Image (tube, rainbow, N blue to C red):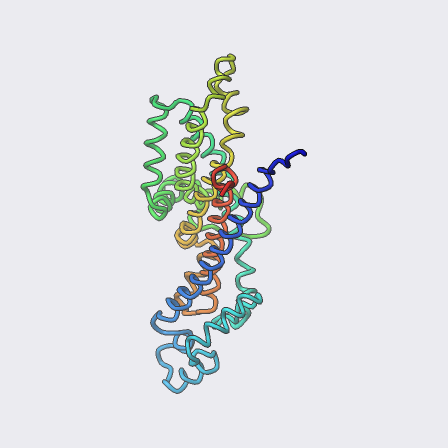
Length: 329
């Protein structure tokens, strides 16, 4: 009688699938806990939308009546349950200041934020890959040390300082670029590039530096493998070795590095959109804090947290698929 051979590939795929599902469950649980934190912190902010809407000259009776009309006088736990139920069903609530659904307010800004993030990724990813591969190919040389010094400097400089220096140099001194980003549907390519140049450059600085350093580490790890030495002994050029042999094997760690690095766009977007007066989700959230528009503030914060967790989940999935030991658990 023959013996059945174990299907290692199938069992490994199932183990990886279970691990990915656990990561997804952890992400959903984290998002639930984050919703509690966001609701609690926003509730602790001094003042409320009723006081902001009526002004300092309003009588206490008028403020009380408006708070009742807005539902702000209900217990916190009831407001949280109602808000969470709305999130699950896609109802983000009513903006207390704009007097319109929060979803409509966000829908007018979300494409702008996605455009800024997409342009930044389109610039940052190729530049970071080039820097990381060059640094790995010429490691321990002057070029490698110069690139490492440059990326360390880019990581150390915060976004608000990069944005301020960019305005001083390119807008005030040289007068090449506008200091405020204007978004219009009728803008041409040249006007769009000029308007987005400084916000994209500011966001790309830290992202490029972190992605390049992680790419360098992933490529160097592959360069030490036996198959690379065999390809070099066969007389293949270093560029061909990297492009044909190293990059396909290092693609999963590099994608993992990209997901981790692009998550930093979310924090930098708040600063960049505020400094350049960019009409995106981050500046909308800052305005919601000023006006105490809690439903709008909570919805914007949840969007940022969900996007961050989604990128972290993508990084975890890439790590699981790239590591045979994780797949075999």
